Length: 521
Image 1 (tube, rainbow, N blue to C red):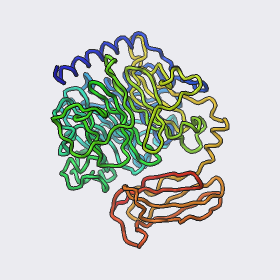
Image 2 (image 1 turned 90 degrees about the vertical axis):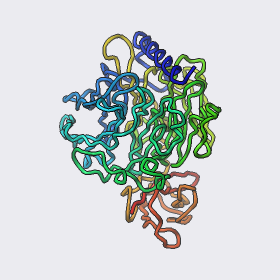
Image 3 (image 1 turned 30 degrees about the horizontal axis):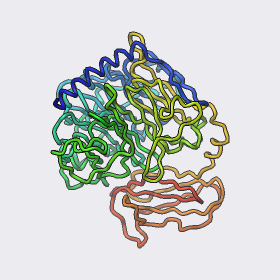
Image 4 (image 1 turned 45 degrees about the vertical axis):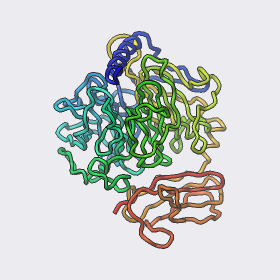
């Protein structure tokens, strides 16, 4: 059986399964003790991707209707939809797939969407300019002038309705990361001259206001990408060797990507991308198993931190929900034992599982009280396609279907009902390292940290290989409170360091906190 035939049969099975799910799925998740699942908004048409604005409003995209909608104070905005994105091709896995908000909002009032194009067989990333109540001083409604469409990318091949990736996220370095899959294209995911089976890292900070595009590739090529001499496409690649990295998330603590890569025959996998320039092996490997020996690796393979066997499932698709990091001061934070754990689920299996890391090793976390089963932290999450952590620490998600006829998509949230317990209070007392400012920086970079109590402290700058290039704070005892240190972009000998990505590492007693620092010329 060819890969394309297998893919077609899997697509048919997926449609049948979704049809059954639409008739009989539970609307509410089953969760461990101390957690509850709350409806935010319902009646949505295949919501696919979600993204928070810094002020807590939520933008979502509907895959098949191509509508962009806004949730304000747990209800759809008074102006609804915000826009219907034009020229979007739907069918199969096509449509409006992902969304990201510019980290400079509202000064930079931009929203970015990932979609398949109707007029050409391509996948594009387009930017639109938001208007309306940007400062959230009134009813919070937003609008979009469709004439402000600026195509950031408009030449990624549309893979015959399947495996187009679909995630857009901004990292703490201010760069836009975007995922694209491959669809039975031979060894294309090992070819860095193309953009199939990759995650790109793009600098959108220099793009002009208003409509237009696509820009010259050099304008969106950031410093610090791993293949600067590899040609126009390779210069944009952060990681490659994926089959369909539909959903990924970025750890705000250290910039690592957690990627759900959808398998073909046997394995669904979670990949961790701690730095750029890694090859994740597809199609020579599916997870750790040899899959296609005829495809040579471009680089030594980096294997997943976790994989699960899908061979007994009629169809499967891993959805990465990302690492749990509670925002500072979050009132509904999860217990401290969850900090840094990676959640993932399966779109068709309808469960959510939890990975705990120790060094470079990751495994399913031990079950907690009231968990539905030893492996599954939660169940009843069929057709969940995206997750995001709110400012209060609750975990929001969207489900494309929940049951009945008509639009049955929902946005819901998982809330910790015991967020004021001792464990929560203890974690609030950990040292905090704020995001570097400005980011990226061509001059001085401020690194502010807060100590809840006096401690022995070090603050160092490392390169991406883990080598220390500057000791900003040699080991010294510091008082509780806020401390602001400045890095001038030089190493310990006073030499100016090249543009790129560095890591600021704060140690305070036994605690260690990291932040990525982006330098430009």
